[in-house]
Length: 328
Image (tube, rainbow, N blue to C red):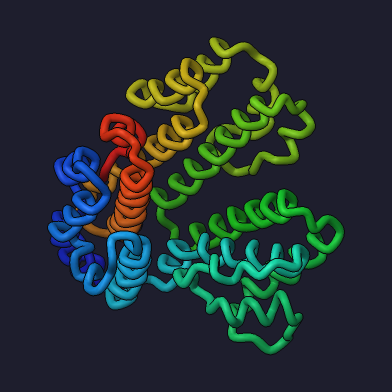
């Protein structure tokens, strides 16, 4: 593999990512149609052919598939690509278990971005097939999940046990990659998932025991410490978190305490994650750049969906700009 070659390709493509000016143009556009036209000036333009404004989601999906194909041409470490797209495998796994026990046809929500083909995962979960074209590691995970979920097939339990296994698998892959940036990134992800879980459970009025079973081990912030801090007041909780976040990022935590809106929480936690990813800009070449570019493309897609949804629902430009995520 040649990370210098990949870095050269990625540095060129980074310049075409949706920038702050284009986000502002979309948000300030008089209507959804005008906002959609702005995309003609971005790297998504080649996926807009024959796509109507109302179908903008198809263009975004096609762009993410195109990005995956591009990364596949770079002769990268296979485990790196597996790590990048594992979350889509687990999205499909959760979806299939919910189809199996919920008796609802939701196959239209399947993602084409996983490492494994949805049809093969479907055979494994819905038909209990033994001969499937799925990686042995994931077959083992699915078979273990089958035993757990059979005892408690509620959607919330399916999500919880699947998310736990997802991060376990991520950590295994990161260990094989032997890259500290990626290992730390996964810890950041676990911290953010745990913070989101804690704050939501607090809003629900649930107790420490409920929190404990919903937290994931392996983050920078020990899960046990979060449980201990659960009952403290907001001021003490902020001081506790400051031990784990640099001063430049403390504003996100304080902002949610002052304005406990779920949309603000989602935005700020994703901005926290992005701030870590931005460190890759100072790395000459390596798997860090690939991870960062992949993240930047997904972040761009989220922002476009958010803006277009807002425009179609006649949300003001100022409110849309308040809700968009920071850019890479």
